[in-house]
Every structure is written in C-alpha cells, then in structure tokens.
Image (cartoon, helix red, strand yellow):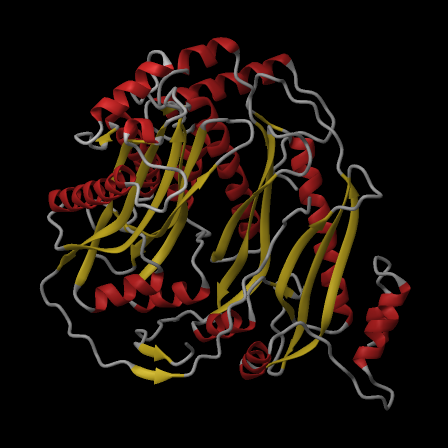
Length: 328
Length: 272
C-alpha cells in the first residue's frame, strides 16, 4: 500500500508533527469560514486536474439511467457539519420553579405555542452549511449537478448535545454539453433524474424549511389544567405540532419561490419532540421540530410528454451488500 | 487443472479438498454452491456466466494499539493500515479459492468483521461471495486475477447490459482520532447553538482520506470509475474518539469503446 507515507510503528519527527498541526489548523480555519478542509480541496483539485477514475455512490441502475439521458458521473461529493443544537433557551426555564408554574397557570387559556427562533435558525443553518460544502465540491469539479443527495444526521458519543449533518451525493456532468453555469443539487436518484428530464422538468437545487415551536401544558386540577387520569387531547402540543408543520411548509415554499421554481418534488420531512425542564412539575414543556427537504424543479421549454408505461414483473429482489459491521 | 490447486499455500487443506470436489473431473460431475437467490441465479446465467462455488476468505487479525495525542485531530495510520491489510488478506484468500475453481470472477462479495469473546483485540475479517465462470471467454482482470464485486446478480446483469464490466472491489480505510476539547474551547462554545469547526474538520478529513484511498486502488487496476461507493463508519472498540471510516465500491471498466445506453423505458412494476 503505497499511500501510507510512514511504515507502521515509526514515530514522526518534530518537523513532521508541526507540519501536520499547521495543516490541521488551516483546515479548521477554512471550515470555520464555512469552507471545506484542505483534504477535500486537494481531492477535488486532483480529480479536476487529472481526471482519470470517477467515483460515485450510484447503484448500477442509477448509472445506467443517467448515462441513458446523456450524463456521466464525475465524483462522489461530500459535505458535513458538526453542530451544537443542544442549547435551548426557552424562556420558560428562567427564574424559580414556582414562578414558572404560576405564570403558566395564569396565562392558560390565552397561551399559544411560540416559535423558538434561535433553534429554527440553527436547524436550518446546520444543514445549509453541510449542503453548501457539497456544492463547493461540485463547483470545484465543474459539475452540471449533484444527484442522489442524502442527508444523514448522526450523534457521536463524544459529542454530547451535538449532531453531525452529513450530505453525500454524486456530481454528474452532461457528456456533450451544454454545461450549466451552476451545478444543480437534488435528492433525486439517477432514475428520478431520468424520469424528471424526460417529462420536461429540470432540477434546480435543494430547498429546506424548518420550524421549532415550543409549548407548555399544565397538569393538575388546582389550576384547571389537564388531569393525569383522563384521556384528552393536549391542545397546546397539538397546536405546536400544527404550527411547526405549517411554518416549515411555508418556508420551503418561499425558498423555492426565490429560485424561480415551478414546484418542489421528492419532499422528505423529519420531526422531533424534545422535552424541556420548565422548573415546575405541574408544567410540561415540549419543543416540536419540523424539517422539510426537497428539490425545487422548473419546467423547461420543449417538454416531452410522458409515454404510457409498460407492465413488467421484475426479477429484482432487494439485496444490498453488507460491509464491515462490528458486533457488540 | 490440479496444478492450480497445488500452488495455493494460503488455503487450508480442507478447503483445497472442498474445491477439488466441486470442480469434478475424472469422471465425476462437478457441483456448485452459491448464495445467490433464484432471481440472481437466473440473471447470472442469462448474462452468460455459470456459478462455480461459494468462496470464502478469512483472516484473524490482531489490531494493534496506537496512542493518539489527546488534544489533536489525527489519523492513526498504524490502525488504518491494520484494518486495510486484514481485509486485503481475507479478500486475497477468497480470490485464491475462486482461482482454484477456474472462475472468472466473484459476485455478491460481502466483507464482515466478527469479534469473539475469546479474543481481546482480535477480529475475524471475512470475505464471502459466489465465484462465477464466463461461458464466452475470459473475463479476468488485466492482471489475470478473477474480478471481484459487491454487486448482486441483478446489478451484475444490468452492468454488463450497460456496457461495463466489474474489475475489483476497491476499498480505502482511515482510522481517525477526534481531539478532546479543552476546557477553554468548551467554555467558548457553551450556551449557543453553533458549528464546531474542530470536529467538522476531523470527520470531514477522515472521510475524504478514505474516499481518496479507494480511488487510488481503482486507478491501480486501471478502472474507468467506481459504482456503489459507500462510506461506513464504525468504532472497533478503540474508545469513542477513534473511528474507522471505510470506503468501498466496485471499480468498473467499459467493455467496448462505444457504450451508449438506450434511454430507459418507463415501466410499472407488478411486484407490489
């Protein structure tokens, strides 16, 4: 294996160490500015200069589909951001516990769930940073677009309260041109892209919408709150859920409108409910998060009409290669 | 024929006997084993290949130790190398088995890592797949080795239809130590939602390194590209700050100069 610079076991010289640390520091600064680290920059530059082998996470079907419509893979592209999302300043956990409880009780009846603007911003920004890095890699490759972008949220044991947002996709280029001035980004699979283009639409970019709504509900009869022993809807939480969904959908629509899109396809949403401490046992606090992700598409002139589909019995049974997992 | 079996010092005797029986010859009929599903079997046959046997390669490897600087993001190259070499050993033994069967290649390769109670710091690296032989002429790699791929029978068929042939399962490994945060760093970031550039850089770099190594391997076998690349992240009991990023995919090359693919047709599947 010639790509390992040092043989096993040998230590590094002080100069090597300082060079390595310097590189790491420069990478860190690039990342802090929203860019991609040196390793990534270099991989992209090498790929762009040397050409040679393309990499892709396309399945064979996807490869066949995109080649069928005149595209070829350029390289696998990546974006990642490790983000602290644990800190939630709710306004409800301030001050002594009783005060919060009483405040909740007196406000009851008029109290509406409200948006936690800081958290909403973070939900979007963490994802946007990862997606922006993926786009930087695609731009460096002078790609026409990125297909099959998947967002993964992972949690690491050593990073409590933080989430890692990773996006992976395959940069593609039109074989015979003309080339796009800016690569599109899309969640579409290779087959999805083939179907979309054959119906006269073109993907523009990933669009997102998010909302975090917080709500409290009072338990205990003394304050006219919910009783633990009856079945009833907890209206503030339902309202929070509804508001979060509405706001997130509105925002993805607004973002798509800014890109001159006709619509959004391939929408995927995720939601999460977080419990927070209100300071009073009688007051339950919840934060509802909603995130919607999709691909904005635009109709291009010369739209082809969809041919009628033919019926087939597929020979495909799902089987994916399972690689390198470790047991407990 | 039997010469091929005689020169396999890396395969245990029992395996040689098993392979010999499967090959048949001397008046005896050959027999194949495979882990292909029915559909896969049909499609492999349709693509002009015969399955010749289930092939396995295994290596029990002791993964050494490497101490990282507590406060630094750094690659642990000793461990990267160990993880790579152990898989490489298992793969090459599997290839030797396929070789002994006179196969042209191996489809559906899976790489597994098993740990056992009886071996602290030991891991079994295993490669399993189904060896296939071409009915039409040699499909071996330019290095005269059987091709390897993690493609299913269906993907194998589609790949050949699309004018590509698999070359080799290519991989890259990077074991990385993520720095522990100092109290100062922690104090600066507490109380706000924000990106942690130090951690982002570590994870980003590690993935890029693994991807690049996979690509280097593909270049070595003179591939045109890699399909189905995946990046797996796992912690193999080194403590939570040490993570392996493992990139794996199938390197492919075109079978002919002109490989235009007909535009795909829309179909309605009757499967569900």
